[in-house]
Amino acid sequence: MRWLTLGAMAAGLFSAVLLGVDPRVVDQASAGETDRLERSSEIFILNTTSLSVDVYVNYERASTISDPKPLVGDFANKDELSPTVFVVDGTGSRPYGTYTFSVRPKGNPDGEVLASASIVLEQGRSFTGAFQPRAGGGHRFAIYENDLSPASSARLTVRNASGRPVTWRIAPNGEAPTVPHDERSGALADGEWQIARDVVDNDYRIEFFVDGRLAATHPDVDIAVGKNHVVWVMGNVVTEDPGPGADKDLYQRPVVYEELEFDPGPVDPRGVSAPAPPLSAADTNAPVEFSCGPVEIWETTEASAAISAVDPDGMVTNLSIDGVEPKAGGIEIPSQSVRPSSAIGEPASAVVRFKDDIPAGEYVVTVAANRGSLAHQAVCALEVTVRPITVARLGDQVQRFEATRDVAPPVADKLDVTLRDAQRHLGAGDVEGVCRERKEFDSEIGSEKGKAVSDMAADRLSAQAKAFGNRFDCG
Image 1 (cartoon, rainbow, N blue to C red):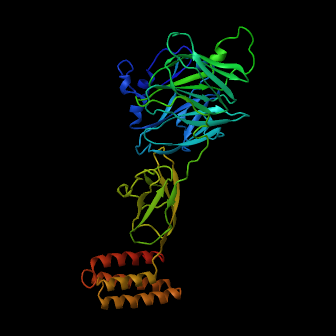
Image 2: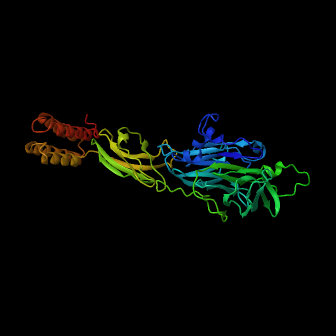
């Protein structure tokens, strides 16, 4: 794929450069757009203004595309232009789905969003996004799909990024006068596009008119079979009569074109399509939806909670913990518990595990979706309550272990008496009495461990009794 201005003669090298292949040895037939799209989706970024900007993907704080060069002014004098391309390959860091592209002034991540638009990037689809002026002022980021469907002839796509209505026409430029040719034309409002199908291959001149007067031209568009020539008229068209003897560059600089290859296929229906707007010029990226909590657990008890997240128009490739407030250890999402989305719009899930050493209290666990990925990121505040051990909790545990025969009934009766005495001291504000009963409770468990009390039940009851006593500094 090439971006060309006046005088471009170097054919077929950009695809090789884009893929990191030595252009001197690349097989162009195997390195075309359609081969590449068998394993990816792509959007080329075009700046049709004189502004210097950065492009931010999916609301990232850092720009993903830094200073795509404006294709106007002196820069447009270059014969061949290499546009910035953003590629999605279906991996965890760049899964298929909806991506939003936001344009801000260069080097200013907190600056005004000058334009923003989103598009679904799926395997096999190719787009071009153009930052362009709008009629009446301001800017848009307009996204157009590149037609690479198989055909047996050539195509010409014309896109108006000039910020004003234009008419256009192509005619042979005279380099091959004996070769059959086409003459096509159309009219485009601000931002619109048209496609001419089944164009006879030849060397053409394309002209753009504003209010009936020539405003921009490209004298050599080499239309060939198996290619879609996407011609752009940009925002620096001539709108006032420059007078006799005007520099021809004034008319040639506003026009660049892409040369996109496609595979052989059926005959295209002949004609010029009706003018159409961009596929997308607005941010429609749906937010990630979480299901995460709240969670309530007991002190000294290991626990887990299932969470999930879904991006209605994208994929969630991972779920992770960003932080815990107030800070506490023992809360994690094991990597093996994470199940990424299986397709666009499908949920991802994970398990949050809580260890038995988390102090009693209220916590907020920030769970993040798609950290480390350029997919749409989001966070959820998982509210976690770790309840302190109480006399009632200890009594419930004794009864549960008695029911499972982990505590023999006579021992359970003794422990119940001790707990009733502890509750009585607690009600009277007698902290020393509470601590004595806690010590008695623990002593009874220790003496019966491995006998009338199973090792598992003894360990758990002792840990809970200790946590209970810690509230009163029982030691």
